[in-house]
Image (cartoon, rainbow, N blue to C red; front, side, top):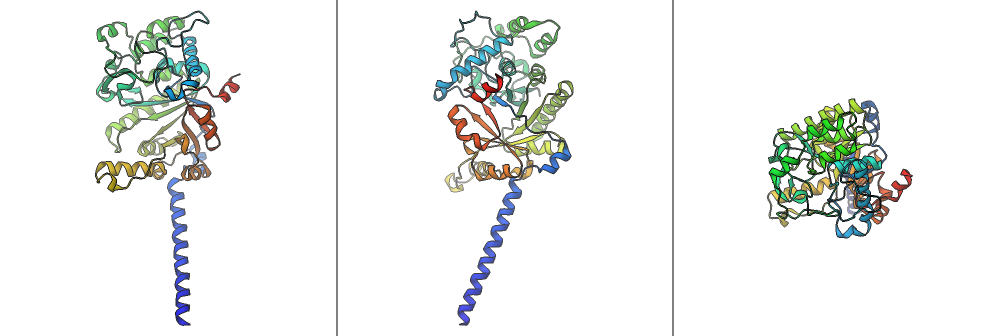
Amino acid sequence: MASRQAKADGRHHLFKFVLRTGLLAVGAAAWVVSPRLAGTRRRDGVSAVPDVWYAHRGLHDAGSGLTAKYAEGSAEYVALARRMARKAGYGAAVPEGTEDPMGPVIAPENSLPAFAAACEAGFGIELDVRLTADNKVVVAHDSTLARVAGDRRRIADLTYDDLCLIPLFPAPCKAGDVKVPVGGVVVDSKAAQDKTVTGDAAATAGRQEGAGSARRSSLQADCVHVPLFADVLELVAGRVPIIVEYKIDHQGWDARDRELMERGDTLLRDYEQRYGGPYVVESFSPMAMRWYRNAHPQVARGQLAGAAPFKPVLDHGGGRASVDSARAWLAGLLAFDWLSRPDFIAYNWHGGDSLPVHLARRFGATPVSWTVRSPDELEQCEADFDRHIFEAFVPSQARLEQS
């Protein structure tokens, strides 16, 4: 009898222990993935993420997402990008109905023409910022120019003047190309220098009264290069909302990262004062968003993430790779949100139904999808997200909103 009672007591104590442990685990998980709470957002005066469609790296006719997989639906998107870029004054004018859909690139990703096209179409913009060797904030996604210019050099090793000599998707690239063959394009630097108008000069010309679209086209058509962030902001001028991604290419945090944050934020605060244009910020780096949390809590901030497979340390034999793999897996679980306490979660579109995203949404975070590239993908993820970053197709909902 006593032994049965002891076993029963043991099971009871075990149940209580498991229950307590489970509740603690659930509470810890909720604390980890919790965004900035509604009361704190109100106190800090944070606005919601503007409810518009966001064109990924601008409305572009060459670059990201324009792969064979999406070729069937991307023709309309590319045509719209080219039409809107021409409407904004970029590219050579052509008689109506004679547009060559496979002609030379007009509006490559993350370029002034692509951002102008997005503004003309009424889309918000998602873009990426990083630093040059001379500490200029420029708009570019990749750390090198290999994919967008056929040049393997790192942007961090080049000055802005260097970038002005390197055209994005130059001839013989055509509209719809997803990348430039490395080494496949020979750039005549002297010729490019003769034709190129630097970002400051182009921006000054664009601000002159009565400059007109024809003049802007003649200034910039010969060499569309990586733009200054300041010139992009000057072009957008508050017309559409912007999502600004701060690119941190390593897992640490150093003085150069802080330099990027400070310089980028200075430009954005000046932009807000001059134009009142809505913007939010995001990054894969929780430290970048923690910087905004501490320095400028009034700015809406977002944590970029995507699901990553769990790979045990032994799969890599230990070392750096195993640490990076574990960190990527944890980031996909939003396990670093306690550092950034984001207002929105920008998550890979096919992971919107995951438990961490559902929890963050339940606690008040706005889920934003990236990057949706077809009607089918949108249909699959639409219920899980409140905002969408898109490319390679024109969402039918956006057409209805614009009509």
